[in-house]
Length: 262
Length: 266
Image (tube, rainbow over all chains, first blue to last red; front, side, top):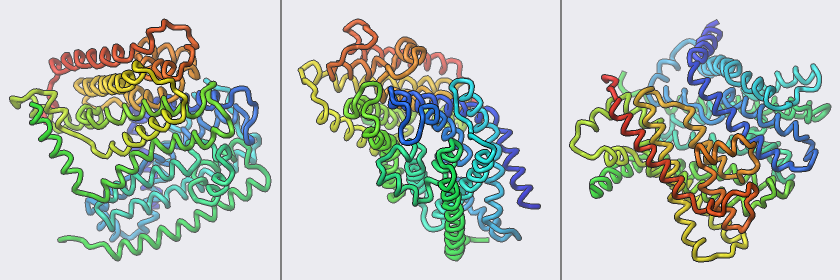
């Protein structure tokens, strides 16, 4: 129940930031349009590249722009701030699971962002371009599952990066570098299928691609049949692996934590 | 005046060196952030060949000019960065500046200087030099002189946009996020040949906000490419006019803003 309340509060907080979200939306759309122009120019006269039609490539820019705020792809510092301020001490001593408490808040925030940022981007895209939609109901369902798993993978990663503040005063720099790594390796900048094959197959075995590239490929129906199951399986694997890693990091961090005064 | 400026700056620099590991990560990270976009583009180029008829080294020229200039501006004009300047207004720091018997621009330029931008400047320069090396440019004296002029003009242009963004804070207090479309968005946009964009985008960024004059037309001239829009042959040399016109207009707007400024009372 407590987790639900935390999620609801985080959700409502997003609804309160209407102007900020609207301005962010304009920026997302502008950059989305730029990326679409670049892909249109790259395609030139070609109809299909690496399984992507031009329409799929344009849709890809829309879906990835819509996922930015859902996954806070460019940075998430909330937990780190509480560690630096010392609030983390009281949060840790409360009778609830620390990871679960932050996860609940992040789910609420993500839903708020999905409604205020993600959905309007897709609607505007649909008005400007002829975008592709998931081909069949089963793909809609698969996209929903995949996006949920993607959020969990992304959350575990961001949670761990934030925990760096337990060890070092320089955690902000580590964070900024960590967000860039995930932007680069997630397939946000270009569809992974467009990259040289050695690079793309390496990326598919890392967790980052399963935050962005996998849900997008499922949306577009590019990952279909057995590839779809493999993609979801890989996502599930990374959920479990990163969750375990996050809990280990948290345990180590708490052991390290020294509270001044009190 | 200049000695005062350098002293203010050296204070900013020393304070940023207090967390050396963070500083190192930040500097490397700030370069890598935009470089990764370039690497991603380069990685897909083998599959596509050209973007709007331009090869990768040709796009690298645009990219190098835009990145080097924007990142240098971002460091030098840190004090006018709308996001930073709005917090200065909220904290009442700007009121203090108005009360000091010192020139306002010296104080604002000296109020922040983000050294980690060096990472981004470095990667911009690296790409620019690489493009000089890879493109068969017929160098002439005019072209050699034009390179630094283009960079300085682009710095002036984006500096002007920062000042406009900061001035808007006099009315809104909060920084207007939409200005990012012109600053960060503008940099990304002029990193690609202008003819790949739709007509309305291109016209807006040629005649209203003259970003296209800064790097696109000079790049056509450096590479010896024909102008696809058949504009007058003077276009490659209008970069300083466009850049400094924007900067001068921004300063004029700034003066109006300062006169209208009413403190937040904090």
